[in-house]
Length: 107
Image (cartoon, rainbow, N blue to C red; front, side, top):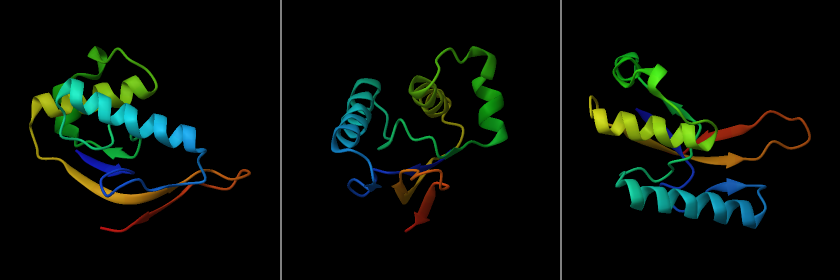
């Protein structure tokens, strides 16, 4: 599992209202604490799973939607522990007036 994390090196989000940044950041911290996940950005949507992990998870067993889906997928992948994870640092820029989202890899 490879995760593009907004939070592996501080908070790296551009053009979000402060309330949304704080909610997202502290939600990830809470989920990380409660589930015992070593993942900084549990709600990240920029994630890559190997085929093997997806087959082991059994996508028919995934119940949640939205951010819950993101968290459940990472939790199931972590519990399977079939491969080591990697977080990639990036800065997320909110979509502005129909422009495509951008991300920059600062690894």
